[in-house]
Image 1 (spheres, rainbow over the protein chains, first blue to last red):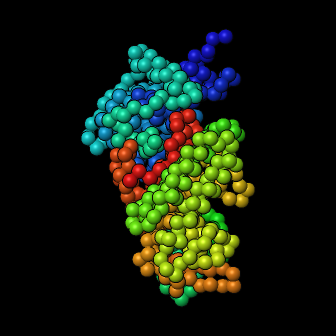
Image 2 (cartoon, one colour; image 1 turned 60 degrees about the vertical axis):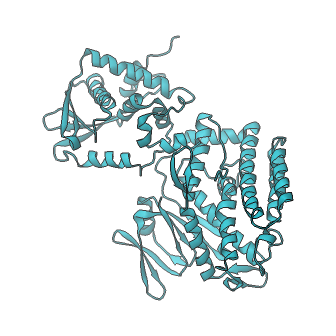
Image 3 (tube, rainbow over the protein chains, first blue to last red; image 1 turned 90 degrees about the horizontal axis):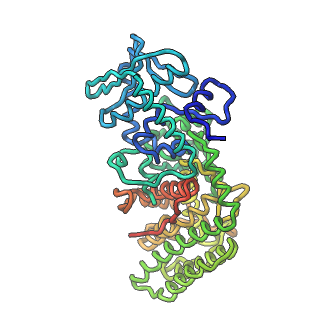
Length: 184
Length: 330
């Protein structure tokens, strides 16, 4: 018997169908998948992050304060947590545009999840309020494929017995797992 | 890094608005900046209620309680933010695998011996003749590689510690004798200080372990204890020479603590309240000292070294990447 397709596993889990194993992907896992696969592995093993980390505090702060009156926080299946604007679009707020690709994939994943699990098609908007920047994000064919490939990639990382080894990257400096990785 | 607060007086610790307030028996009120607190240490007789515990919990602050004779009596720890079954499973697996367990036990002892040796060689350079002790410590370290089980490893540790303690009488000033380690209760000033200092190191390690999802009761060098956090003992041993013994030597040699700071009872000798204050103040200052960390590439406090040690162990257990125990590098 060939290994089940992670995308199929995820959909079965989300629909609460009988499936050979549970497989959930959260928005932040999508982000980590792009930023750092080792971080994703740690996250999947519930390694605590340093909540006092400056970047984490800043991100939480920006998320809690920006557009507070315009967006409504919606949690779906306890798996994804999205913010919906008054006009029905899905918004993802990030403190800076430095890591735009991971944030975009996270948002695309939300749109994909809404389409395939909940059955509604939405558009998205990626916002960097501190920089007064916004970008419209749509889920097309190509984007859907990107999301599905990422789901398969996430599956490979979280089901492996050990994490990818640590490699120094520019983002390491502000990572909440920095001390965990580099305290040898 | 957040700091510890020590309370020696008797009274009541309470939540007052959005802060913590100590009301002593004579009615004096003191406020503790809770945002900057890592843990609160209660040495006196203190009343507190659930409202305080919930408030400390919300701020992630631990409460460590010391009872009669400065014995560590227990902790009220913040509810864990995240628990990790997998971490516990890996921790137990390593314990249950004799080869893995002895390997970790050896690493704890190797680190301890290194750190004891570092203290001895410091005093060896300052007018003492400890060459033979340094040789003994180096020999015990080399014997570690040949140990095949934890009992044997413990034996090597005991030999090293005896050799290490044999230097104390020479290092300590006149008026202070050591004459071997004794506790339950300590019978002289030096033993009493070591007991107090070690219990402070221990409580700080308990806090550090709780910052990870490691279970403090599953240990490798020490037998997992029924009523104590034996993993904290494994890790504390690494740090006692740096955090406890150096502070003891410094305070006694500079006459900041004298025999007047102790009270002798029938068969025990304990620090007075002011003695405990002097010691814990110096101890906290030492926790705040920093050193440049070669891998983290920044200065870290001695207290943070405890956290790092817990991270390193957890990382080893989860990923299989090698654990290298703390060895003073400066």
